[in-house]
Length: 309
Image (tube, rainbow, N blue to C red; front, side):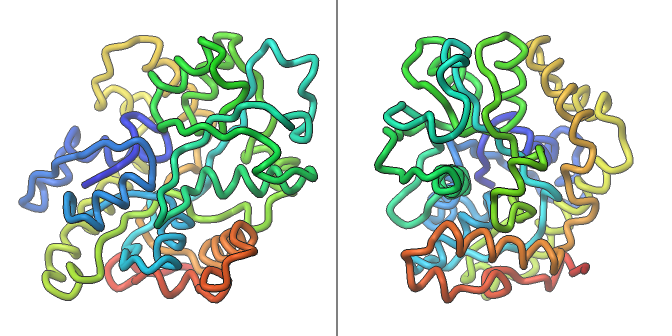
């Protein structure tokens, strides 16, 4: 399975699977292939380097709008976490998103066939304050701690559109401040479909046709993992990950406590969340006719995970 990370908070359930043995409970041994972001995870999936991937549902929709055949098969997250963080040295000059005009911004890399959820959100944030992507300089970055910390510490970027726990860890080190945080109601109010489904377990349509039992088993693995998370403390989760770096452990634990409703409890798709995702995706792809015609319902199957309101 291909997944952004490691230890990206939104995708943490995938990292946990081999640690707690929910794969072995289903008679399989999961091999994780960490990637720089959701477009890379989906690329591994479509190129048959992996049979499953975890990626943002808006990224999966972007791939489908460009002819891809990926299908969401279970919800992983219950709330999207994204932060637009800015280098502390710019605190006096950058007060709002519009102040980023002409600045260098790190954004998770998209591909020709799929725009990352991170980039979709960043472009909507720019538009909400009167900017277009051409008014800033976007440089690619992965959703990993080493690269993002290096970009901020070196001053190679002025800001990064990122996820947790990297943002909070850099904030705690006084390296960045938060310009926008999707967990903040003020930021969420500016984003159409702010309650979209982020991390989603996905596979290829051809695998569903050729080996539905394999797909069903992977969904059961993810559901077991999500149910384990729901019944254990954040301390126990971090303990199971066996992270040696004490600073990383502490940052991860703090974020897990801060966002208690981050993960789905059972992998079921929420009809309301799918509606939010569709609204978000359409706002991010206003100039793409195929994307505007795409429904969130058409890129998922709830055959194995189920559905809730």
